[in-house]
Amino acid sequence: MNDDLPYRGFNFRVEIDGITEAGFQECDGLDVTTDPVEYREGTDPNHVRHLTGLNKYSPITLKRGITDSTSLWDWRKTVIDGKTERRNVSIVLMNEAREEKIRWNLSKAWASKWTAPSFNSTSNEVAIESLEIVYDEMKRG
Image 1: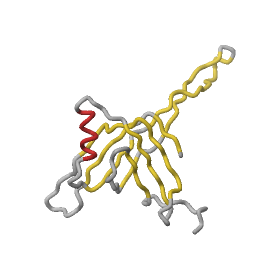
Image 2: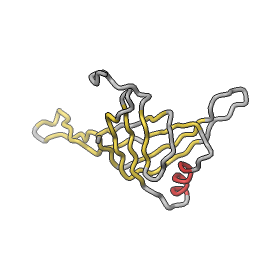
Image 3: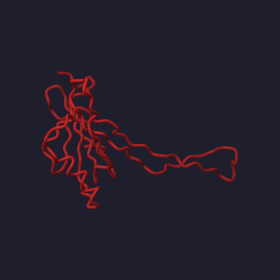
């Protein structure tokens, strides 16, 4: 197998400290942005210069078919109850041989939003729940 080819986006896993069963069909929103801070120098008042500002990490959204397991809901409920449990989360991209190739480690993560499935009596699709997670820092491992 040639590892110079791009990896496929369907071959991933999510690891959340303390939650062992959570197969997700989708993970979206993994990104980091650094805001520019504009300023001007007194010797050149007609041109804007830029400094690096704060790093911002977007929330990730995880989606999966809802099951009897309450582990994700229980984690979200710690926030609702005012007892937020911050955990480490890893998004792991694998090659087609299911070998780990790239890992993104999210630190001090907590579940900021849980969304119930949409219900439609004329559809036979799987009921999908989603969980939004915010975090303080991302590192590529």
